[in-house]
Picture 1: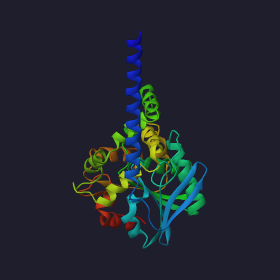
Picture 2: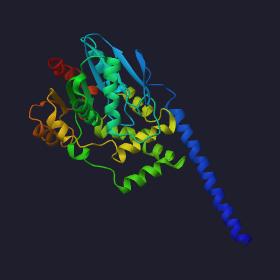
Picture 3: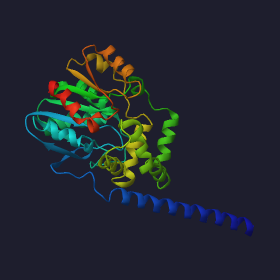
Picture 4: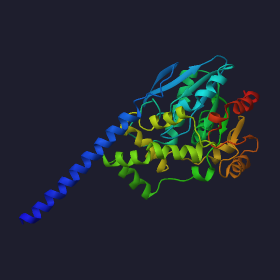
Length: 316
């Protein structure tokens, strides 16, 4: 009996020490990743939305344009730092940190596409205050399309940079995804796994493989991605798991067919299967205009800023 009790105590002690070690690692990662404060910029404002404070930047003057970064736990308005400077010479440029991203609040909720559609509609009505051009990056394309479909009055036109594959957007949560979401929500352990999925090495690999064409990404953008993934500590994992478990997905086919506003697509020529993706978009809305940016992947606005500006100048 004593031997059995000793084994149980030893096992419990190992678990307790493991949890303490995980918690210490979690705190160290969050402290290290936010130390440089790479997301803070001039001309930053705060919008008190119903689900939390929303951080955004506003520069320039002229016809308004709203830039919406990639829907990702790595995402923030910093993604458009170079592009917004160029656009601000002729336009009033708003760059928003979506809720759950960057410097905006990160409530511990399940994030959905409709939540972001509400945010964009409310932001344009209450902050921009007039019809605006909406430019989206990657996974945020569905947000722009659904916002234009559900509440079209304040959206002038859409510019989609490398929109998400329609088949990918049609994936919905299954039982296994709900179990995965529950697993990530576990204190300490779930946060530790999240941090292991978002190490500097993992983020750099994503930048190399998906975001940029060159294998020498700009350091300040890498820091911004890393910081955004860990700002506000464990709260960052809730958007990550919502995306992984397909809660932010939505079938946009009806919206895509129904929108009668101008839609433009800027595509990186080296994004895998991009021509097939764009072909699907054009199939459902033949009025979409398409331009390609050579030698670029998912974020041409970072490494091919002037080429993007040249394409946007004729649109804006």
